[in-house]
Length: 335
Image 1 (cartoon, one colour):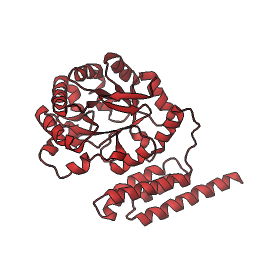
Image 2 (cartoon, one colour; image 1 turned 90 degrees about the horizontal axis):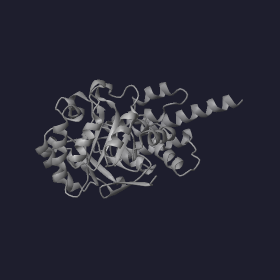
Image 3 (cartoon, one colour; image 1 turned 45 degrees about the horizontal axis):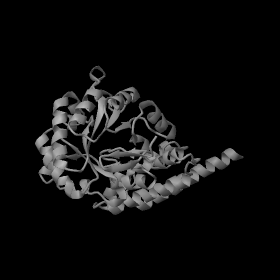
Image 4 (cartoon, helix red, strand yellow; image 1 turned 120 degrees about the vertical axis):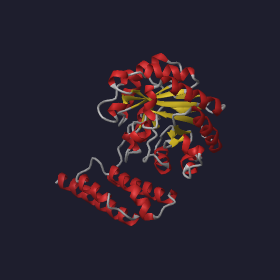
């Protein structure tokens, strides 16, 4: 197995990529995951039509920093002309890759005919891809799809073939239908079938939460790259774990002190990068703080308190209190 995968001219290490996640994977999140070994990052999804109408958030969402590379900007839309125009605008931000979202299950996206609604219209999806490829020049265009719209209409193979013919440089497949949203188990068989059906790289996505599940994704699907989404919530360490396993090194999980140190670093980065006030930025940081505490003794109570945070100093005090609780619990168990 090669150590890297090439998407167009872009070479990516074959460990794991960070999935695009609206409302979660902002720049601070991407930078934290990249620091711990994420091989490739993708922006939060950006409306193609919004970009064409000079949406004020365009620069914030499309800016690519060197620390995040290789990085894709992800667009969503349902009209080829708008997609082509949006691609031309996005090229000014010099992304390594342009990705098209064809998998988002959220009603407000699907209702516009974009996201996973495109799984119901393979021809339109191919037309959108072809328009984007023409506009992108030598920047590779990829697409992220689902296994299908519903269990009765699993058509990822048909979709992938059409997108490859339209010029897509790679396909990411989330092994769930739109109807599943994020429930149930991802179908790795569908990802395998797509891999066998196309000659471009295939990225597997779904249910990767640690090194074992990552390796299972590689083994069972034969995919070229694994993409981690929810498994990275409060856990940028997952990329370090995957890298260690890939290199045959023993991985040591971070201590509670390390987790809290990284959590606070993550929050500081969010505050630094946010144009909002500390209190407003802390509203967005709350869920991240809660995720870092998952799986520990008494975490439910602390997660509830995370959603009340309004300043960095409060987060710092809560983290110290959380560490004290875990250490006292450990000491009691060692008696």
